[in-house]
Image (cartoon, rainbow, N blue to C red):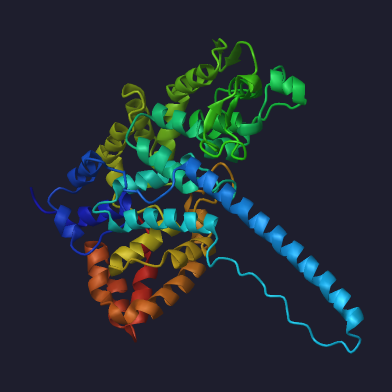
Length: 474
């Protein structure tokens, strides 16, 4: 087979996190086959996380950490109050006002436990992206994590959630990922279902508490059927009733399993419910799972997922024929996500030479690290993401981060600032022309090559590379 370096470079930018030194040449003989082979690797998408906590473990560890800090603060407050009383008593015996020794202050840990858990998970995520040979499966992990997004400000479980739900099912059936996501403690906390009670349930009647529609609405609107499709407000309400009782074990009273999923029948709305035209008998927790399985197989879900995949990987103005092709693939394979990804790669529309998508901030940062062969400080990476408007695991809404160019083009000024800072720190160690050849190869335009060659310094040349239009796009 003839070598095609240009298509190889395009493949690594469009479906991966951009090339590294030697990777264009490594797949030039069969770029499309190399992208598909990334899906067939044993253990694709999985990462060793022996030192990281499970979602429930993180929840319990942070609960204990906060409880201990609260107790320590209370003891310190009592000690200071006792010291103040002692000072007041001694002042009456020391009218000359002899100075008293200052009260020592306790020091907080250098990094609080919730922050350390976040950084450990973030490090693992970015290491996987930087180290990936191809990066297609890692890109899919990022895509699905944004589709089924949660927020680390709502729960410390964000990183564990991504490992347990997204990575575990990234190449499984869509239904498997859907079931895992909607029943995960992190999602139940983020979208407030953990406290939702059926109005006619035992707990709802006794505690005069009611229904929360958030998880039901976002499942229908964002995760499956799509906005303004085949569901109604009644479907939202009825589905919210179906998933009452999907909650978590309380951490305060369960130090071994607190923060883990549990179905509480006392919170569950009794009776049959109709969702999107079908009646579902009250079978407890299985009632909700049956609804989710039907939503996963609905034609509207197939089109919604297909459209999002095409928007993410190919273009904001998605080719209708490509969406149709992926929709059929979703239906015919019963939502097999690996086959859906292969269908995307095999489609001729996916290989249009126009690079229509702007890299999102996280993708751009990983591309810069891969181009320079550097690892990067996770503190700097996460700070950069926040500056660029894509703080890790902190989407602005349950819809996740936007996937349209217009949203990210406004942040190019901030990218320039970060590129300058990065280049000033590492530029003297990098050969900018070699980096340009490695990361862009035949995609490198003459103007960019000439600008890099004419730069006054290595740091300036590296900045020009990182800000070049062909580097910004995929």
